[in-house]
Amino acid sequence: MRLIIFGPPGAGKGTQAVKISQEYKVLHISTGDILRASVKEGTELGKLAKTYMDKGELVPDNVIIGIIKERITTQDSQKGFLLDGFPRTIEQAEALEKMLNKEGQRIDSVISIEVDDEEIVKRITGRRVCEKCGSMYHIIFDPPTNMGYCNKCGGGLYQRDDDSEDVIRTRLQVYRRQTEPLKKFYKKVGILKRVDGLGTIDDVFERIEKILKGVA
Ligand code: ADP
Ligand code: ADP
Ligand code: ZN
Image (tube, rainbow, N blue to C red; front, side, top):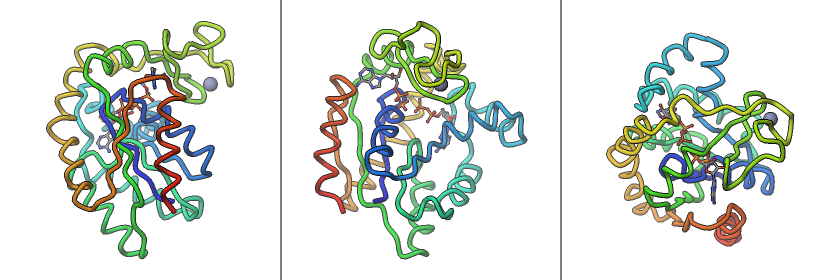
């Protein structure tokens, strides 16, 4: 099964991706997580990416496409994968198609999580991330047992630099302008599946499971 989880920033892509990859045993590939890991390590990629991420802008297509090319050709990805945060532009989507075509593969479904702007701002401003394992929490909607610490590994929770209200506004504009047009792209191909993203994390996951029952 090869899937894309799609939606605006803060829609719940990462949260659902973790659940889907556990249940369906597919490799979770998050470009945001990969970039944040590079920033933390202080690599050349990380230094470059940070200048875009801090402003809420997209990292250049050629950089991101290179990262994905490397990941989806590994042995782990042969059983299937779930792309989270990629593609974000038409150019990225076209590059992905080319890569998969070469291997005689294709994307089975694009799961689009639909959430309004008001909810997005609430979700992003309350988001906290584990500095050790990357697990996501929300101070109100999905709080950890011990405030400030990860349930899974005990690591400290932090707020992402780009989760401030002014950067969120830029990210939403970037989403509308550069990423949302991809819905039309995948609708034409006939693989776009819209999911209502409002409700609890489990409610949304149940809706996704229903869709995935129909997918090979
Ligand atoms: P969110 O989960 O809030 O949607 P991500 O963690 O996916 O955010 O991405 C954080 C930032 O990393 C983006 O604002 C962008 O700067 C960069 N980024 C992640 N994925 C991509 C991509 N596919 N193309 C370009 N930039 C990306
Ligand atoms: P994305 O990867 O799309 O940026 P995340 O999965 O990181 O989104 O979710 C953004 C924030 O919203 C996180 O703090 C997460 O705990 C919270 N969240 C995710 N799904 C829901 C939901 N269904 N209801 C309320 N909060 C949610
Ligand atoms: Zn943790």
